[in-house]
Length: 266
Image 1 (tube, one colour):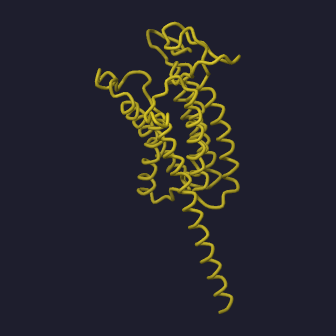
Image 2 (tube, helix red, strand yellow; image 1 turned 120 degrees about the horizontal axis):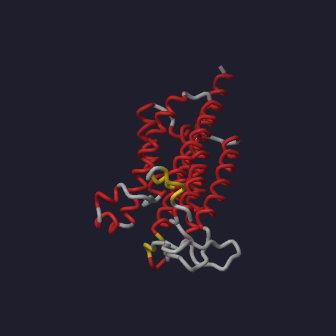
Image 3 (cartoon, helix red, strand yellow; image 1 turned 180 degrees about the vertical axis):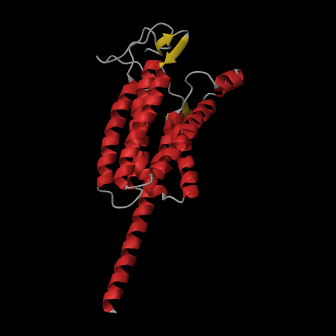
């Protein structure tokens, strides 16, 4: 845990903020590389990046207040500008909604747009979790594994050995980014990579919730946390969209084949 990287002339540089900025920069570098390969217009994605920053931070902050309303009501104005307090699922949902609106305005295919962005989103999430480890948030449950971490005095888990949960997510989302890039090379239709991102990210978060030390249980009877409930929604959304797009793709292919057959008869 190292929440403050360094201090210069009384100005504190926070690790979480630096890692968030690095996540955005490296993610967007990957997006631009993919944009050039797809021969898309880079200016559209530059503009979209601004939307992503606003929607991502705003959505993540909003969901934090939904999960922990007492923080907001204790100090409404101060909590808006305090350090931490971001729920990444809120950011993902907000970015998806912003992307839908953006693509409609720009008349861009959401499925194609999402395929370009999805691997970079996984990369950004992986890097951002390192910031969580340094900030001391999103900590893991108690364990006796040789790679357990010990947080310093003042942390909720001080004196205990806990899972390095943020690093687990970093490793899994880096693997996810590589897998999505591979899937994208052989995708059968537009949107394939985008909705597989939702499935993979949802499965990762759902599984890791069981070793989180800050787990907020929503449904006691099923021992499901708030994030797991949202994960199930993301999983259903991703699977449903893949099924729907697969059916649409097959229908389009059948119509095209019928048209070709009719043309040859003429």
